[in-house]
Amino acid sequence: MPSCAPWARAAGLDPAGSAPATPALVLVDWPLPWPRAADEIEALTPLAGVARVQLVVPTDGDDAAGRRVRAYARRPGRATYGRAEGRAPRDGVAALAVELLAAAAAAEGTAPLEVLVCAHGARDRCCGSLGTRLALAGGGEVTVERTSHLGGHRFAPTALTLPDGRYWAFLDPDVLAAVVRRDGPVGVV
Image (tube, rainbow, N blue to C red):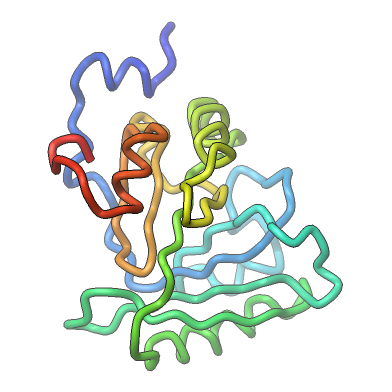
């Protein structure tokens, strides 16, 4: 039985229109291994229904100062998400996230480009292998982070760019580089 992503690519499946609309996101640095779903983490269950929660592999390796929490919120009529960031102890993540969401909704200006690549092997082996490989290869001048399930694993590797909130499918290092540089033929990306 072929893996879902190579099969989907060979079958010519089109990912257009398959990404969810997400008015609010919370990114939480959370060490591996991750459970199958972020809402299985007791400290994060208060965020259910408030925002989509994405776990992110910590880049600093030390959460003595608290876990990094980033909140993104989109106001009606605004093309990009507002962003706010802070740190919280494990048991204070949800409360801080709610505060940060309010700050993100009020934020003006532009946030730096962030690229989250689905690398959630507990959800899908294609994301776990293809996504992890892509994230570890990096995005050149932009940090590429491994995140929990984004959806659409049949289109792996998938990614989400912020603050624009765009989902990307069937990525490879060259396509990811074109996405980061915002160039290249539209049909490829």
